[in-house]
Image (cartoon, rainbow over all chains, first blue to last red; front, side):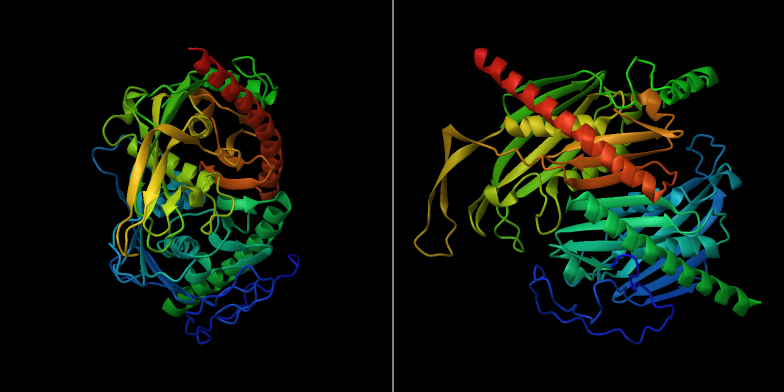
Length: 255
Length: 287
């Protein structure tokens, strides 16, 4: 099954968005349909656009189902005076949530865990030697949290970095998989995430076949990890295609 | 950061390539581990673990609290790690904050399992006293006393030992007349319940230096790493958590290889810790 998953369709239509049904389901059953009608190995339609914020050096907006994220990249600009001299560039990442991003009104504060995960996912892809003594700031704002937030943030941030013209080895694409009993469900929504048994998130550079960051929770057998990783990597490479076509479109439109 | 000359760096890397590290260990060998339990009398459970020159203390306190409204049948566990400036001058002020939060999150991922509680090392439902009303809040506080690399493995081992040393006071509950009343809870000073720690995993960090990977890296070796993967393995050989540090990317096949190595090493570490815990308990009883 993992050899030929139908993860992403190469279209950017966002019209198939459906209202999330609030019904609880018994996820442990072997057969159930997902609330938005997708199959287990099908991702939400990805909508990506560059140039979302004018003031930034580069920016991108991503909408994966109900998850909406905007990322701005500033710099490279001079590092703060207090910083020690560095022959390579610095990367500063920050992820924050809006107060209205979740069903219950949140604090709207910084998300430290995601900020450090975003940093670790991107630092391996950026050629930091190309901007010594300077800092690149990546600010991500989650407008609406609809599940799989971190993968969307990472994907959107790498697109914003590309839009800003920061040198990278490759685009970073990210996809997560949830585990329910014996089932693997790709690109979970937040209601699915709330009852998952475990999750695996992979951020990778598909052209180099390198994993820059991965995170796993829950209890997994090796065979299951193998299957989930294959599923993620396949989805990542297809997502990278969509990202690439989005950048090409933006480049041809502006010229 | 560790200041190393070019020659020393080459020496470390060359040694790792030849499977003979600077302290005479092989790539997959741990440093001698020493375990002490009951080091903090005020806590419900505590342990000190020394792994070479790395020295950590973990204390566990249980307090009565209220379950989260969304999860009324579960207790709460919080893990905090503190990197004290006594361990290294760079931990002073906010310097240790980044490392502390990173370690705390990594341990939470490894020990607390998935959102539904599957694969959790600590069974949260065993902490409930009255469903929806009263539960135990378990505070796990780790302190880094001295740091010489491989903090995550040492802290995870210390948490495992401390949990096996933890006694939760026995409680008697007097339910109020109406179901809305907050029940009366009587905490016993004498009787303690032991905590089931058979499901608590061990964490094995594999540090990649050039083409090889090593376990239990010292800070000198860590300064030469390209990336490190921390894998938590439980008694059944299942993987309970995985985190990666360091910027360099890894080939997916290398990660799978690392997982199988970690499973093997984790088994050995688990049985070593079990015998250390038994020895520490025996010596505590003698005193």
